[in-house]
Image (cartoon, rainbow over all chains, first blue to last red; front, top):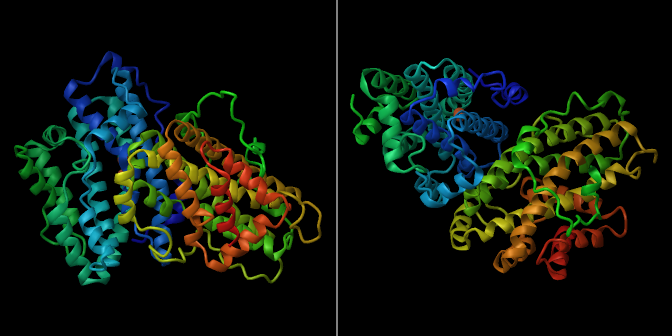
Length: 264
Length: 286
Ligand SMILES: [Fe+2]
Ligand SMILES: [Fe+2]
């Protein structure tokens, strides 16, 4: 289904939690391991804007859709960060900009798309990089929805569940954009399919892997994606990804969990 | 509020204002202006062709934020979470500024004028990725070497770009460009709204750039270099060369003192000398 970009930009809003009773977390605080996961999620959300560097602008009308989307998307993700930070703040965990900066300085940034982009700029892959970028985005957004849903299920905290539901609802629109872009580009080019297949199976890792410490990635994936339920959720994401043109059989999320040693 | 970004106004230094509140800016970022604009009240043919063309070019320039973000975020600038937080809402507000400009241009276009870009969004980035300036990879390498001092240079670029664009807004706000020479209140109101939005951006860029350039001679040196090298205005890569030149003629062609006012504004940044300011106006006019 075509994605209506004008409708999306006109209705894009910062996620609202002003009506939610965050004081409930003082009475029923989240356990430390959940706060650690939330902290990871907040960092990843705040970091989203940095992925604007993956954008390739080329002279076509579709690229203006991509720019319009990224503008709104960056802002929605920023507010996801702010919303999660508000929950953390009630627990005495503060994330201010200086702290985010310190963690960005400490960790550096191993961007997994970089090697692919280098070859794009060397003229090896060309336009097909955009198909990779869009498919990559789709995989990340599906993962984000799944992570928030898993978190809500595991915690069974009504206020948290409602906040995560609102965030996940916005992630679903992100999925819709990325998949419509990716499908169209993949369907149009077998070369795009091949490059995307290669890039995803070779380089994809759970969202945040390139900016967070490995032990944090393992903690979050173990927390949210272990056990039978976790695997089922991972399989669902893989099914969605492998349902895109030319990507049949990909199991990148389950593979990533195996690599991290997450118990199934 | 829009006095802050007046063409020749040199932002006040010396008085210690409250530091720019990025969280408050994010909370109060302005989305679509469609409801606030009185498009009906702008008569057809209210503007000269030249003014309409300038407004459409301004829309392209204001809307070219993602290309700019791509270039600055491959450098150490991406690590500064306060700056990236600002840029998120900055891009959002500029998206809607561009939208408002296209709406105004559509309403005020001279009868029979070809409305080159009457789509609701920017039509095309006219130039290929690396046609102007350095591409992302070279920037990444250069950015790595320059470290955090490059952030000050990027903020100075943002500040000066606002000064450049404001020359055009200032002229549009006056009565010069209307077809019959009388000011149009609805149009004036639209431009005022846009300048008010941009005044906050300018305030952030100026404050942050000043703080960095004052404390780091290396940041000031980088800023001088980046300012001298950049294509002006910053979004020039997304408009045709003809439109860029026409924009510059309009921006500099109102008040005869506009070029020197612009240079004064540029020199109000710490560590930015006369020569650098002259390079900017030279490249803009060239
Ligand atoms: Fe998000
Ligand atoms: Fe998302």
